[in-house]
Length: 240
Ligand code: ATP
Ligand code: MG
Image (cartoon, rainbow, N blue to C red; front, side, top):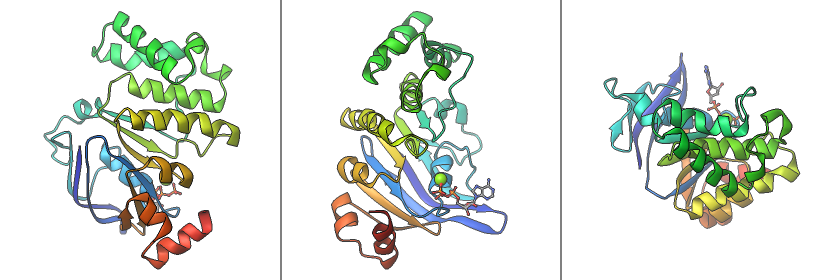
């Protein structure tokens, strides 16, 4: 569960997130949509403190990460993040990429980690690739490994920042299918995406972000079929 209250993020004089408040419940799938520069990535990055909030409160799994006394590394162990670019370690095999964090952080033994890694690789449809190096994989395969790697820490929450934007169109479906399965398994997910079809189908809630504000939010049917704000309408006219 994530609780955000009055979150403000400034870069110098530039207010990028302007008094955002929301609660993301356990098992909820929230899709963030909105124009370039509206603050979607910055919001996501605040949730695991890759960016520090200027003011406001963010509570993740009961830990106030805006409190400097909170051990952010501990909280981060429960937050998986998947970016547009996969950031796999090129010198490690798929298997080694996946077991690295849970064994390094002593969350799992080596045996437990490799067993879990094989389960996760099956789940993302890549069981046969455990010995491959990232360079031998397609973009979509790399991204599915990146998802498996994040899941190896058994996170409570998964954050996705445009996970399919860098992929060739024919790879997008495989990655979205993995994310949809994860949603159906009950994972709490916050997803920045331009895949409106996916948001419509999978999201419990869609938030339209504009100028650092959550301008409009609601069930995907309401947002996509009955948008209330002119800004939402004109954005959707452009992207749908
Ligand atoms: P896109 O759809 O293009 O990814 P976005 O909604 O994710 O856009 P952000 O990346 O969150 O937008 O950026 C929001 C604003 O914050 C932009 O004006 C951007 O220039 C600014 N910004 C982001 N990161 C930094 C930074 N590290 N330093 C200064 N300004 C930044
Ligand atoms: Mg972004």
